[in-house]
Image 1 (cartoon, helix red, strand yellow):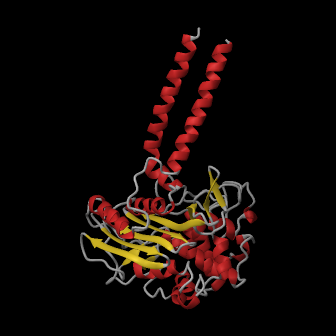
Image 2 (cartoon, rainbow, N blue to C red):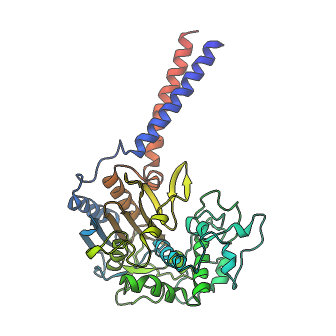
Amino acid sequence: MRRLGGSVLVTITLLVIWAAFVAGGAREGWWRAMSAANGDSAGFLRWAEGRYATESKGNIAIVLFDGGHVAETFYASHGRPVDGHSLFQVASMSKWVTAWGVMALVEQHRIDLDAPVSRYLTRWHLPPSEFDNDAVTVRGLLSHTAGLTDGLGFRGFPPGQALPPIEQELTRATDTLPGASGMTRVGASPGTNWRYSGGGYLLLQLLVEEVTQETFNDAMRRLVFQPLGMTQSTFVDPDPTHLVDFYNADGSKAVHYKFTALAAASLYTSADDMTRFIAAQFPGANSAPPGRGVLSPTTLEAMRRPQAFLFGMPVWGLGETLYVPNGAGSYVIGHDGNNYPAINTTARVDPATGDGILVLETGNATLAREIGGEWTFWRRGTVGLDTLVMFDLRGILILFASGALVILIGGVTWYRRGR
């Protein structure tokens, strides 16, 4: 019996060590091939071009940043040509830009990050729940830690269908993606766990309108777009002459869905405009400070501080995804976006170096995120949690299972031989 107990203990210990080894190795990319040599932006872009050529029948815009400046660009389409002025619907990347508008109002002392959001609302209120609705703050909404359990994910509305008012979408969204309740309500204790919530950003959209007494688009134009020179960007009525074609994964033309949830899913912007937004994360020419007067450098630093964690790893700041540590006390930051049926976007930026990537595309639901994840590994040598889960998980599980099987067989064999 003592030998059996010892065999079980040794086997469990080896399994734990093996699991830690596999997890650590996956995070550090031990089994991944580099897409290009270190610092070879042109080589990385060639790799990304190859992924587009084999994986997409739509269109794409890629911008690579090196030291705060544009180093490489790539534009391609299987239909109408695209360029730096072409307007893409950028899906949930909208949330990052929205967060700048909200934080601009915080800097103006018109919003308190840690006050109950209900303080600012008159047109709609969170429904009663078993939790404390007054614990739902702007900080919690920006970081997806407000305890909202809507699960949104908006699908959008096809052409010709009237858009419901924001109050109706908050009460029960009618354009939910599968698996979402669509009800913006407090279903978990606020401030405890990270739960991605499109409904939270719809609530922030209402907050901006209530505080400014402007439409959301007008407020964002005044607070963010005009000061940064984002002259093409809009949440409504994009210029049809510059709007890209939307594609399904099979290369056929896709429906252009529209949204009530503007702040969460429906920014239209160009690679040129997003280049200005990304450049504003870094110091600029003639000693222009990060934030370019829209936000202070202190506020930008606050947005990058971890607010939410998964598996013990920081994943979210104030409106920004924290992809991996950047080795300088901060993180590679940015945001991804995915709209139905096959719109995918990503922007990833290292504020310490001025390096970054922007990918806007339609025709593949995951290509931008794949390219962004590969860029993160190429620049920092660490694989982001999103990449591990979305693209590497199957291989990680196979590797772990193979090693675990060897350990189990070894444990059983050792026990039997000693009987």
